[in-house]
Length: 394
Image (cartoon, rainbow, N blue to C red; front, side, top):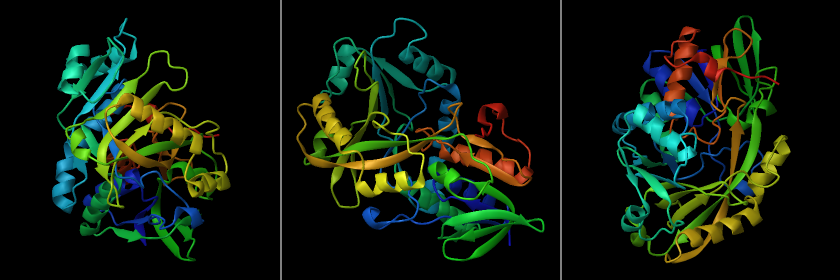
């Protein structure tokens, strides 16, 4: 029997596991490992099956900036305690058209950065060309370049690191899929795909896009679950892009995509180095059923979007030689208020930490800490405004 059972072994659930176990709480986490073969897998999927996610403090939303700032400050501590490296301080570049008013996106990002004390420099057209000669942006575009701590994280490695530290703090990892949860004689009883049953005094649901597809809460959260396909462009001569930062690129008036994000070449499990590019949710992106999500992952993503991304990255880096590449599927859960839901969820002792909104990887440690404080004490103990992270139900 556990004091707390966490359902969901992604970045937020694993961070909550580390924080709870470090506070002396007897905690277990139920979550499956990564599927070996997406095309044949019939269970749940997740978006952390990847080698690269952007990390940065610069953001148009100050709360997201604060969550990231606090998480980034602990990366080194987690790496040292686990012996697992997951963070690359390659820097972050936000590029866009020059702001015409303080309400324009780049102006808002810059204002948030100054309020948070983020160290960055503003680069004009000439500065961008000098610093990043392999990138092509429209004339007059400007960039905000953040170096300290910004760059990329490896989500697979981050989860391994969080769980390794948690195990050293006597947390228990259960490689299984939770199918249902109910309260029986004052304890929560969780049944799993393998036929096992586990009991806990409290329950934290951190199951991302799959939250509404299992009998865990008794009611559905208001989550907008969307598919996204990214493109991994294989780089034959990755040394040509050494020093490349992670990039957010806002387009001005482009009808197809509002923005693109890119990561520098990162080594993937197949031994090749890939630069990653993504843009926005796929056409016909809403995935409301469990079968639709499974089919999306099993099929390898949206083929047309992959082709568009392959052409786009070559346009942005016209002088870089890319071998071919491959599309990669991703699933995202958006909330009505644009921040994760970290809240009590109806029945006493049940809590949720769900809804990364496409940007939680970099901030997952602070989101997990927020959830851990709430679960441990039963009331809101975090300094940020609880109402901004409220649970929203259908």
